[in-house]
Image (cartoon, rainbow, N blue to C red; front, top):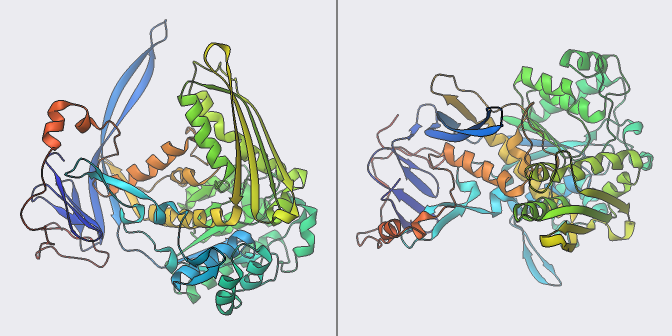
Length: 570
């Protein structure tokens, strides 16, 4: 893509122009490249790219490393038609579920409301897909040209998501918002006529898996055996899909954190054993696992927004058999997201974190449930694991098996409600025996940070369902059912077996951007910026804006409903 230039021909319309090969026009940009095509008959976008990587081998008795650069030609196929999507939330009447439902409705209705700071307007700030940007490339002035991430490929508009779900409490969503005390009252008043009609379906309640203090809320629960309750969950999914005339349903757990369940041979180690255990009403099959199995059997992507071990081996095997996506675990919204950034910075700078102490207190129902030791243990595991891959990446600072001291504390303080306080201390060894300590205080509006993450998880998971990839000799295939591309949004990211876990935040985001760029026929983002460093390359980029009139959409380019077109290619 050398000798390219950018032309802005009207607001939010940017065209990428090289030579008249195939031309793909998105809603806000077009790609001129022989490696990308649009098939109007199947409404699919085809893009061919060379995937470059390196394989490292140990060679000889001295253990010398041998690096072998590799190349593989891949074709990405993306279905461009955005389907009608519904999201079913487990814990719909909780702080997260009620907040995300109300917020999407407020955006759909374009509501404004008065506060003591002035008039506020509904927005999707905090959503990576809706409120952040990505670079398309370099413009004629040498600066990057940015577009919203949501414009890279045809993505689901969050305002079009239909919501439903389950909760162990009978409150409607308007009442749930009032109890949560997250959204301003003047906004709640405008939404009440709509939200009061939304009532959670009865959910599965097994007291042993959550804190005993949740029993007083449990007045909307299913009865019967676990197999019977799973059948009701499946019926609920089918009824919602039919009633709302949906193409897809995505199920997401945003309910209370459960304790870890046992993982044992004959219990949940295989799909067959897990289904038998549910049929036999085994005690160690958790509610979240039952929801996951029900979703898989209905062909619905299932995302776990809490830290418990929902995805026992039998769940993963069943998802592989059915070709259904799983995403988890635990929303990454506040303290842990900051930790993944700071530890990555420290280790990358050659500093050695030796002590990490994290303290939280919060007063919402999540905090109340986590006050029980057995549920706190699940959260502790997900929070503490976030630094492991960054520490293991640096054999200069750390010996094999060596890790920083790492402590996580969570306390329940009812008065602060959803406004969680997080305090962290990072102590590092530095140059010549010195010490460095960083102390941070972070006030997190817990549900207002989690709600846009829920939307991103649904949007990205749905888009991944429309992407297929093939090698030159192979057939088109979807991503592995364990959808590790969602790691950017989750504290304890699930990855396929024998796959490294990446917790470094910027690497996680770059993964999402570069995969979507490949689907659109764009090269991976490179931060070398040689156009600004090598004199001969600097001379080639110093071009002036063409004096000719701005490029218009070619009249011969067939356009389809999602704003993507191709010139002369079918």
